[in-house]
Length: 85
Image 1: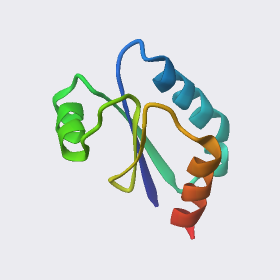
Image 2 (image 1 turned 90 degrees about the vertical axis):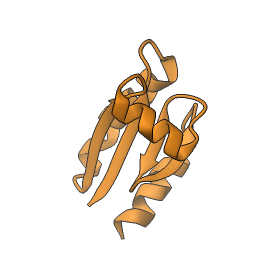
Image 3 (image 1 turned 60 degrees about the vertical axis):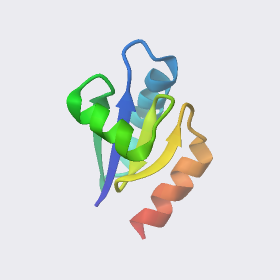
Image 4 (image 1 turned 135 degrees about the horizontal axis):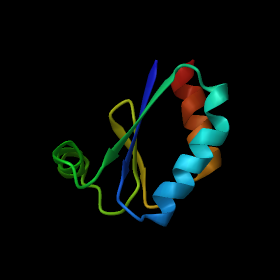
């Protein structure tokens, strides 16, 4: 199982774009457990500090920072493939 966490902020365009992208491909990734956490929640603040996230969304794969701000969709899918094998 792969854990995917999106740290998002209210009204964030890039956050909404990532979530829309994930919704469009999640059917191909039954092994991925997706969680969205708000940056304004205490849990989100803790993760922001831990991973030094400066832009949203912060994307974590298996508790490792994958990207902040925007997401390279091809690199994201490639990383999911690596983690799933």
